[in-house]
Length: 264
Image (tube, rainbow, N blue to C red; front, side, top):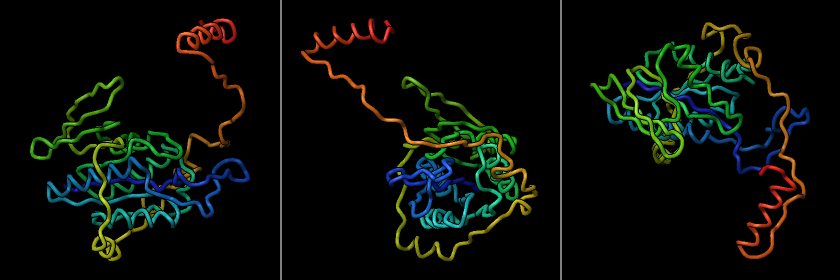
């Protein structure tokens, strides 16, 4: 099987974050970046399927030059090659613009399966995989927590995570797009051998023109959504500690909900 995995490089959420001067995004200078969490699980699932079927994994990503670091990591853990959508025109895109670009890149090859993470850790649109599936005309499943190939690898039994501990099981014909939820598996670490081998693996680049797209169709120009501003959550005083044992505290809480908050 030939499997494509779409990954995104995002700011490390454990780093010290600063809002950019224009207030529209984070200050990225000196900010460490990592592979998006659910994308790492999608990559691991793709590698496991490829190992079972004797196939290969091709990794796709979109962004500036620093994205090559994420692609090299994917190659080091086992991906066969990578494609970098590297033109500045791709920058600032929402799920629609990014999904359009990735779908155009995917169409240039013949894949049996496309895997993405369920959502990104920075903007969290959670829609890029669905947009890719729409452009490809393939079935797709979101929040995937289990994948089993069936019918001689022509179909997949997919378990989807629902609310209240309930799972949904569906069967989709391949090719398809599956959006993987974090926790599906245990992503592997790169070995020294894998790191050395990754240096010799291909990272192809692509521009909008290479994909048959106009610059106005991708990135910020091709987006329907605009990030107007970002800010840290407001913090302040207002918390109250209720004294006494559990019964007294519960009684006081109910009274405040009735008389002060007026929600009961």
